[in-house]
Image (cartoon, rainbow, N blue to C red):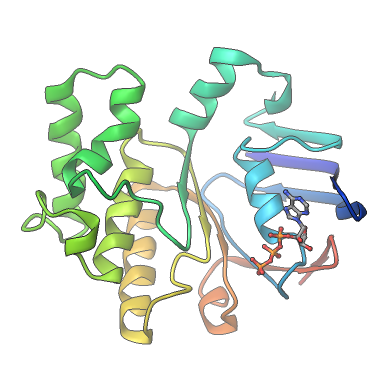
Length: 222
Ligand SMILES: Nc1ncnc2c1ncn2[C@@H]1O[C@H](COP(=O)(O)OP(=O)(O)OP(=O)(O)O)[C@@H](O)[C@H]1O
């Protein structure tokens, strides 16, 4: 489903050039769940951004279902990000002034989905993640685990085929972390989603189909 070949990424800073990804090769199969482990600064978030076309590599190729995603431009690239990939981040990046339902609807509204249809789909997803009783709550009125479930519902509203989760439980306690992983596992089973999850937890990573270790901008496959 995803082929990454020779991906390199460097950032120029006032203190010099930083080589963050030094030649990444990776194939991810449709429906596979891949965990990425690695120490802080190894380049995990940078790789996730490139997989979701939020950032471009300096060299190399990323194909999604055979299509070179960095050959896409303008509206086609926006559509790729909006429809084909769902993102969940550690700090859920919900919009604080909007309620749970509105936050989940947002990607659909951006894609010009009719409001009633977006709302129905958002409500269904919120019910599915166990938040049917919190539709009108704003993020500040929800617990950390509830906010993360809203973020997961939002990531799925456009029915993407790939879910990218960057430390989705990094700031949650162990009971809530367990709930979120159980939810991700169920969504994988029910929707056949392909998932790439960055985690610091070996025990969580072991629940995925495959673990990849990242070290200093390179992958160590295991
Ligand atoms: N926009 C940027 N400009 C300059 N350097 C950057 C930029 N983004 C990331 N870096 C550097 O790239 C390296 C890798 O960052 P990245 O966030 O990908 O690591 P990570 O493995 O996700 O780390 P963590 O587990 O701490 O989140 C870091 O040393 C970071 O300082």
